[in-house]
Image (tube, rainbow, N blue to C red):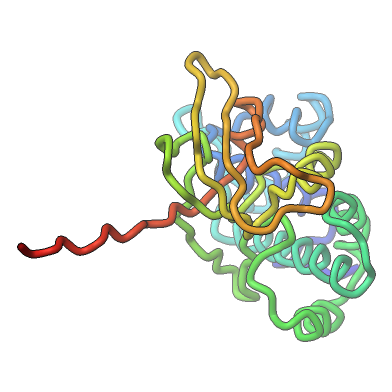
Length: 241
């Protein structure tokens, strides 16, 4: 089994990656939140956290909750890099769809060697993002910073490009693919109904063959999973009299 930063168990790595992702969602990482993320009991999560703390991979405090040490963060990012590279490889080389790759990558991520990882990276053209738009960390554990906002943070008539879809739920991914709402799609926000009501967008550019209408209504929660890069529109120069 390939090791990261001296770790010897797959489970420890999975926990570290989960802690990193929870923290990136601006959540205070607690034992309960981690147990939910890992689909285990609070007792099981607490037992694993004790092992991680003893290995100097996490720190725990009442004020900050669970945080990664520098060593723990590096290990988490190395696993995340491998997982996201596998997702790209599974689509580009193996012909999987974007709603299938998370499960397959999770099954493979602890099995491949560093040499295999490097071959995947080169074969796929050194990708910078996974199929869902998440950035791929560098080999030395640097995660690119991106300034994206949720679709529901736009103002009506704003135009933006979808860059990331913040879910690994295969049902949601299949639905968004049918609608053509995948990374790279340009959309214009038309309306957000009050009190977390429906969100109406216009899909710009060519649409999937099965879609005839450019307007699409999404639930507020679903729209909130789409992270976009606003597109600034230049105002026409004033005409001098």
